[in-house]
Length: 337
Image (cartoon, rainbow, N blue to C red; front, top):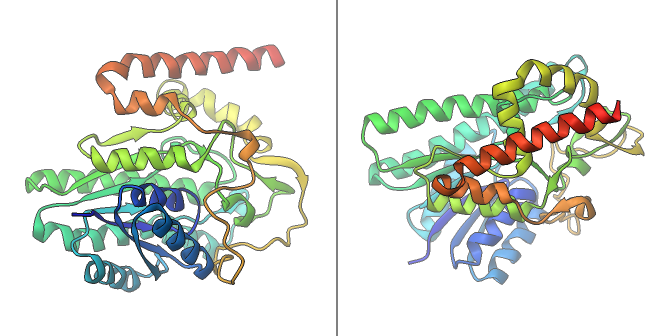
């Protein structure tokens, strides 16, 4: 019997790549996003990959729309087995250059979008006592960086409510599972359409990984949800271990480097389209696919993902890899000064 999978923000980036990987296993995939062209492209990808697709235009900041999408998914495909939360938007700017309405909108999508998705999923899963919810997180959910205060705040909040929910499910001895996958910088189209007030074109902080690497982590977590958290990418290990052991140093380091590392050398005029309020992939021919514009700088594999998936074999190795990379980065910075 094919799995029924719901993927939010399925029109691009990690969501798009995740939908493709579930489709390759023959899953029925409900695709939730705002942009019509992106949804149509994602549906074509799913059908071409061997799955069945249902595109449902949905604003994840609207709970009634999310609940209706869950109803539509089950009407078309039967009980939801896996729900993947990937909803995202952001503003790249110093905190004092973000308006109250912009900060609210990021929070509604990147945090409440996860809350609403989780609510809709649990309304279907708890009565059956079965199902898995995968929260796609970020290394920035535990170590914030400058210029992304709204996004980092939302990702921290996702961690907090997910931990609380996990305790509640354990209390009632539920067979519904919830797990987190913490991501590194990923080559998605978001950097071409995020609202940015930076003088230069925004970019993910290197090292950058392809969305298929992230998607493999999501699919694995959906299959093995008993672990509370998975890490994808060496940089995620470095960041989270660094936050645990060297947080004050990271504050100072990111204060010095966090602005330049999130921008290319390409100047921008501040007039580029953005998707904070409306999708940018809502017109024919505007489908952006899973990848952003950094293919030539992106990694297609992640040793850390293997370590995260094999804790018995990889626990010490992951720690060594992360600390080694962290110490190596510190040494390289000292040599550069």
